[in-house]
Length: 524
Image 1 (cartoon, rainbow, N blue to C red):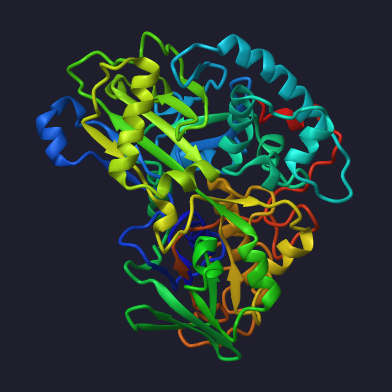
Image 2: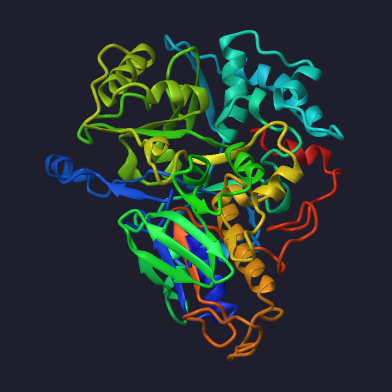
């Protein structure tokens, strides 16, 4: 069984079916759809009927980018998501995979004064301090804030804070004081590439995983609206009880949810999780990332285009809105000509989400009028996703907090009695916070399960390996255990069976620390 039908859960299921020839895999998903935090939506019919020009607008509520896909425009075909995207007809040649040019930026004060030159000048100093901090050969962890302070960067002004936000808070969804310098998010950019691509497909990002499921020789059995409340495990196998009271029994189970249900103990275990395992899961910070989208009257000229001829504009101030994103430039699609967005993270996002949607809209209108003029109209559609309030998720993605150790990570991922295994972007040692981290983690959990059950090396072709081992659980196929996947977010793929050596678990081997300058790839 697999609990959770996001990138990790589907990745685990696909690996078990396609590589190891499993024929009895069940996914239990708590929501009414697969995808977890990959979710797109269309504008309501009331809007598109009044404004037909907006009928092609689609909004991704969660993940939107394939991160680290290329360097200097050269795609790394080894990226875990690239071949899946191609199979779903998502590519640069289809004009639905768009390189994000982060250098296409401006900066404003809250009253609309352009301060781009000052921003770039101060950013050079920040970049130097950040590069030096990444090059430290740390024996114990410190925060990114401590690393920056050590090399002379201490933000003094609203502009300095905007610069720091643009590179740290925007990426990690947490302030530098809470982010690990030793275990930061740079591994994706070291291992694959330094450039990100925006998935701009009207079918939604999740179509990549829909195509993966459709390509399998036999599809898993999928149960939607089946949130698992209790997992019982022991010598005879595992039993999962959903919140509606239905019971599912299997030989082994992969938990592929967001860390939220486990950390908040909405998903319970019997026997209970070891204390350190629970604490380590809680300490994998699940952060807010709110993609606020404002859609304006398509019959009028967008008010921001003349003053903001750029992909993004950072705002130096203490308000709710740290950045603006022009969706036409982001997607490369003229259909989004009148769409303006702000991505709000960390403490600012928590503060924003304490307000009602009406209060958030009022704050947005004040901000746009302060920068672009008092004649700015209200949007015809305004959207505020609230992943933090979703009981199946609890946040947007995880961040490795300062002070969390390798041993904590190993404790978080420890299998339970050889029956319960773990997957999810937060379970990825090198790629937490990313869609491909979920995918790789799911595949790694599948590999680990197969290794633990002694079911053969690299999986079977043409039935090879079937009937080996001692799996006897009800519903098992020969020596293969019946598997269940339940939960909300999915995981994916480890590059070797079972646990790999330090730094390589559920991902490529750790690069040595000689890259130095490469560790500055997060700097725009």
